[in-house]
Length: 249
Length: 249
DNA sequence: CTCCTTCACTTGTCATGACATGTTACGTTG
DNA sequence: CAACGTAACATGTCATGACAAGTGAAGGAG
Image (cartoon, rainbow over the protein chains, first blue to last red):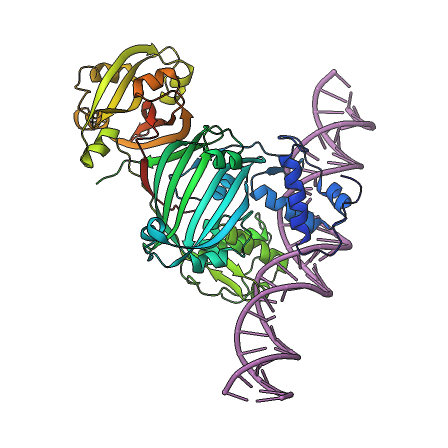
């Protein structure tokens, strides 16, 4: 860790987020291996020259994200990753992953404003001319790209989302907690397809590799369609897991 | 909130957990209503006679639990409660298709009796030596093969099923209507794969075509695992649809 | 009247210090 | 040798204090 890790140069992001991301990077790149002990709080205090409260906030975030776990009196350890998603409940990808014990981060590929058109318009119940936001994100797990998410939202919401920390926060949680938009049902369609060249390049697989393609239309609790997504998951690295019940009707 | 809320009498649980639970109770019983502002941190400090760090730890827990959300510079607010139940429909393939007006039938490829072994045994909660029935069926939609279903059932049930008209009747409906076995949950795992030669020949696609591979473990209403299946769907001809609801944290 | 500054209030970040509690290893004591 | 006690070290809890940053309303300047 070099010697001092100069963090105190005035910076736009809080200290604890910087430390958190540095530690996250070290976990993901294997500097700290699963089930190994992390440096203790006092060691991190000395290494980063910060107070204990700052170190604890960084570690707490990582713990809640599932990357590490603590044992009272012993120390802090790196978690093992698990990669599957349970959608018997409607969850965002990151939301599900963090609950399962690991966290992903997203790389925003592009944000555009488009007209709703004939495909997205009817899904979101907008007219063809009305503006929407197209958000393309690459989602990573263990430094590996695992899916490309293409989200279509009404422009009003898309503009707000553009200012958020989409790299680490789940869209669903932003919509619910920050914007007060309660999410209700979602309709899913799942199919298998082959990666074309563009997708292959993004997902770092070969063209012709198997992909899971998921179309998801999410509604608010009052039934308004809010988010229409196309998700392309790497078939070799991901399993969609869910638990459902037999319906009455 | 009475006046002092005597918390400081020595107690087994930490202060912040007590405050958290008191606040949680007030949110749940309607003392603090959804979208209303909570008392500010300084008010809670005075009310509970604790330090700010303690109040913030309680509020942070509630926020992460989704009960409240904070707005920097404004205050802390109660979240809207989220929808409860979630039910994705559990249907057999033919059951779903016939409801949509398609003509389906199944061709039994093979029925064998095997030992449960290490893969199927744990799923059906049988010992490795116990006998199971392996049923392979090709499923057709409008005379096109659309999937290969490999089902594993306890031999007692498999023997009965072998006598049924599996070409035209859905297994799930036989189990429920004829055998009185109520079906409850199912766990699914969905992934994308490429067709190998054997699968390609059966499904009349080319080797390397995209397939949807679904692992499904179906339980009876009392939780007994009943049917473990591997389903291989042609990616070009099938979409898996479902409708789910957002769950409670 | 409109625009802007100021100020009070909110949550966010960070430091320092203290004591509690759980774990482990290394002693000493029987 | 076995059992116990203690010290070192880990994380957990809590207090006090300070400043940063976002919000909104009141009040002054144009």
